[in-house]
Length: 175
Image (cartoon, rainbow, N blue to C red; front, side, top):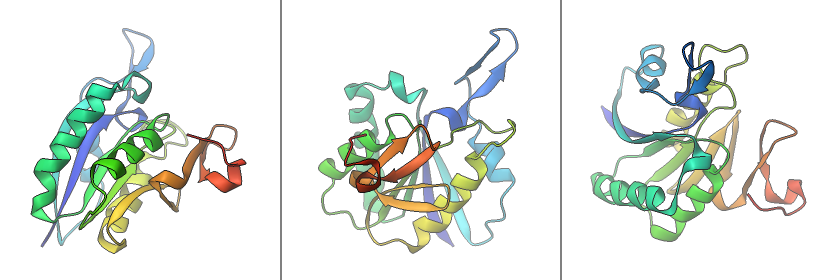
């Protein structure tokens, strides 16, 4: 059985609609709901909560906390999938690359443009693809989303397309 860590930080993939607030919020974890829908007979998926916030609210301290938690998990030599908001996902990916230039396992960031339960929700697809990619990719830091894999330092969110693209496709822009 192969252990895969799923480290949660929040973002749209974890959001739910709050009737009382009339808004989509990061309240509680939804990753368990995603994992219950999947067949993973030879995987031991360990969920590791770190935070639960919109990525636009993430601070340098939040990223430092994530890096510290990854430092605790990496000696197990198990792949890591990180759920994260898409707005600053590439920035966090680059932070992880700088902190761990010699990784022995793949570290994958994924998220969603629309929450679970919303029409066109993409979180389940992205998590599923990330869990498979965690087993197949070489060591490094990647963004896996919408059937695509990007090295974290080569990805940028394209708001117009509603997905990520390689920096060269986005005119060399930054994330």
